[in-house]
Image (cartoon, rainbow, N blue to C red; front, side, top):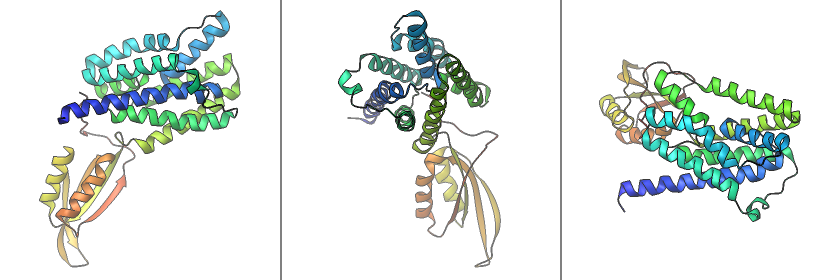
Length: 290
């Protein structure tokens, strides 16, 4: 099996696994705790429950989810990436179908009566499902389409606006239902966010400060492996009173381990300082969405 076929199979497996976990989470932890997740999933559950409670209409989860994702998916297909959008739409379609058609035996596998446990473990499972999508080069749809479109089109961070949207959903849920559900939903969203921060590092950056005597080889390694540039500074290493060069570069967090290993092979005596980058302004290479 050649590399491109294996990569496609890997993406499909990750998307399918992510959709199954997402559906299982909605039908178990989220349902047991009466939680309202963030994004379009939470909005879908809110609309579904309002229709059932106030109109007596049981609308399938998938129908609402598909309608909400239609316009963001079209925008993503046109402006972000075609295959990126196709795989993301596949995630949305599968998660909707699995949620509506998951056998009762799987749903009954988790019978929790503690809302705190539902919020914590539901948030963890939600993060795992989303990380599968991200590792497959896709998203779970909804607000991710909007956030990435704004980020790549206008070079602005849209996550604050997404957070405001989630807050509006929670406020509506608090007004229509019970306040304790909203508070536990905040725990769910916080847990999911923190867990996803650990599981997926594609949107995180690290700063490398490398003191070496083989600066050209180290720079070429950074350039070839990450497509990022670097800046060098000349100085004196006082321990040996010898000339040294410090290379400064900012790379994606997921590239750090491979770079450190490669630098060690080039210059075993290199001094490497890895610093967490809190905020980055300026041009930073992002791999284009396919």
